Image (cartoon, rainbow, N blue to C red):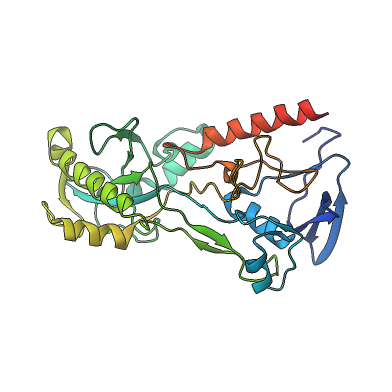
Length: 320
């Protein structure tokens, strides 16, 4: 933060990328009720993530012309792939009542808060997903299509449902995703959050895979060491039918917060950025975040996103 070539501005919301012709020249942002514009000598880098980066491109007139016209924005650069092709890792919580094992939710005591605050020790150092595994739902796959996360508490409704008993949750997470969603503007006003259509299970194969994964987790939780700790499933029979599991999946599935691919890299008509992460049809503008991934990887997106940033740094250095 002490570097002379770095200024961090807080409490600001970027409104748009400024274009002169087909060249990005800076960005305009709002802060404390006022609008400000900063200019770029070389290029502009967007790192808003798979939600905000396509939103900013569209607010700047870069995107699908017909959609931009719906919210009163004139397209300056036609790019149909902006905001399209969204992918994410959906998960279904498979929640179990325990046979008395202590729940993490019980451990938020003043003593444990102080242990965490003063020494960074104790149960509140938990990342919640204490253990996990990748697995195949069928033979012949080149890589796992499911991931399991084991949590020492009940996690339902993104944590907004208060646990009423001691629980353990195993997240049945789809990592080989076929369905595609989208990000679309609801308004030309930057303060309006965009419409997010996740597209979960639009492809039947995704639902079939999630069903198989949930079934496998049910089997694992009823044998070996797990059977000695877990009592009964939450809102499911011990041996649920496929129909009951599908209803559970459709009711409780939510995001793992791994959205990608809304500014996908490639060479086809839907590609938003080229292999150097430059926005097609615009000079001096790159996107550097998970939105450039052509598809969501079969694993957590943190490390691949760091890799994207390293790749961008290499490409920028090469262009100077």
